[in-house]
Image (cartoon, rainbow, N blue to C red):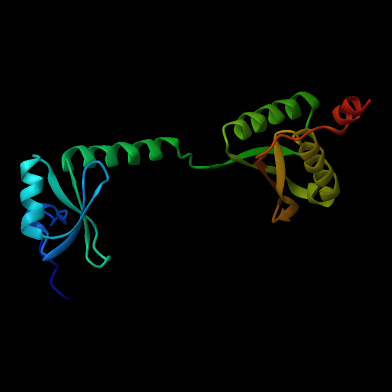
Length: 195
C-alpha cells in the first residue's frame, strides 16, 4: 500500500497581479487613468509617472505588442471588479426542476392545487416536471394519464411551453414544462383587437 500523502501546511500560492514592479516588460504602451494614450514608453518612466500621480501601473493586456498598461488606483479597480462579480452572481438564477406528482384519477380540487403549484414554480423561473404515477394495474390506462398531462399543458399554456411531451418512464408518465420567455397572446384577444 502506498504511503498517504502528507498534509501541506503551507498557505496556497496566490497568483499576484501584474502591477508596478512586478511588470517585467521593458517597453509598454501606457494609457492614462482618463483613458488618454501616453504612447510607448519604457517601464521605468511609466513607473515614475504612476508614482508621481500616486497611482498604480497595472498590466491590462499581456498579449499585445507592446503590452498595454494602465495607470489607475488598483485597490479601487479590484473593488469594482469584485462588486461587479457579486452583482452578476446575485442576478443569475439557477433554474431548478420542480416536480408536481399526481395520479390519473385526480379530483378537480387536487388538480387545481397542482396547477397552482406549477404556476408558482414557473413564475419563479423553474422548470416543472409533471408526473403521473401508476400503481398496480393502472398502467393499462396510460392514455388517460397522457390526456391529463396534455390538459395540464393546455391549462398552463400562458405561463409555460412544453419542453418534453408526455412519455412513459417505468411506472410513471412524465412531461416537462419550462417557463415561457415571451407572453402568449390569446387568439380571442387578437380577434377583439381586429374588430
